[in-house]
Length: 291
Length: 141
Image (cartoon, rainbow over all chains, first blue to last red; front, side, top):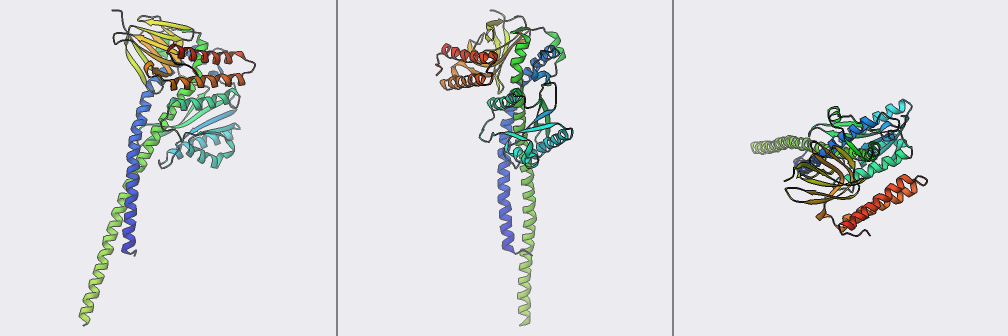
C-alpha cells in the first residue's frame, strides 16, 4: 500500500497536469475561433476563383495548347506528395492521421513502380515521414516562425512546387491535409493540385459568355499558378483549424482523464488515511486493554 | 443618379469591400478600363495598379496586385492577391512589393536565359509596380 505522503504528492501532480491541459484547451479554443474565422473569410475568394478557373478550364482544357499545369505532362511516373502537418504535437491523432494517409499513398505508388518524392510542410510530418520514408524526402517548408498564416506563406510553398514542376522534377502533385468538419472530426484528405482538377460549374458557365481580356489562354496561364497557391492557402487554413480543433478535443479528454484520476486517487487517499486511523485506534485500545 | 452595380473586392485573406457603386476603374492587364452598370460580361487579369470606385457611398481607391476582375450581370467582382485601401498603403508595403518584383525579375533572367517571354513579363510587373508607386506618391527605392 502506497503511503499517504506519496498519494498526496501524486494527487498534487495530477492536479497540476489538469491545470495545464485545461489551459491548453482554452488556448486552443481561442485559436480555433480565429483559425475558423480566417478559413471563413478566405472562402469567397476560393469559391469565386475556382468557379472562374473551372469555366476557363472547361473551354480551353480540351485543346492541345492547354497549359501543362492543367493537362499534365502526359505521364504520371513521378509523384510529388506535399504533406502538410502541424508544427507542434499534443493534438491527438492529427499529425499521425495525415502522415499515415500520406505513407499509405506513398507505399501504394511505390508498389505500382512509380517514383515518389515527398515535400513536407510542418515539423511533425517531417519527423514522421523521415523515419520511414527518409530516402523519398526532397524538401521541407518551415512555418514554425509564422504567427499568423498569410497568403504569402501559401505563395512561397506554391512557388517552390511550381519551380520544381517547371524543372521537370515531377508529373503529379498531391497535397495532404486535414479537412476541418467540426471540433471532434477532422478528415485527412489527399487533393491533387497538378495537373489541376477543376470542375466546371455547368450552369454558371453556360449562362454567361464572357469577353476575355487578354485571351482566354493568357488568362488561364496567368491564373493556374495562382490557383495552386489558392488551393494550398485554403488547405493551410483548413489544416490550422483542424489542428486547433484536434488539440482542443485532445486536451478536453486529457482534462477529463486527469479529473477521473484525481477522484480515484482521492478515494484511495481517504481510505488509506482511515485505515491508518483505524490501525492507530486499534493499537491504542489493545494497548489500554493489555494494561 | 446613374444606375448602381454590386461591387466586391476580395483578397485571399478577407473580403476587402462589398458595396453598391456607379463605376469602377480597373487596372486591367491590357490597360485601364472603367466598368459601369450593364457592362458586357468580361473577365480580365489585373496588373499592379490603382483600382478606383465611385458610388453613392463616396469614392475610394485600392492598391491591387495580381488577380483578375469578373464583370457579370450580377455585379463586378475583383479578386486580387493583395488589396489594400490606398490610404493604408505605406512606404513599407511599397518597398516590399517592389523588392518582390525585383527578385522575380532577377530570378526570371536566370531561369529563362533564352526565353524572352517570362523575363519581359517580370520586367513589366516591376515597371507596373514602380509606376503605381509614382502614381500614389511613394518612391520605389
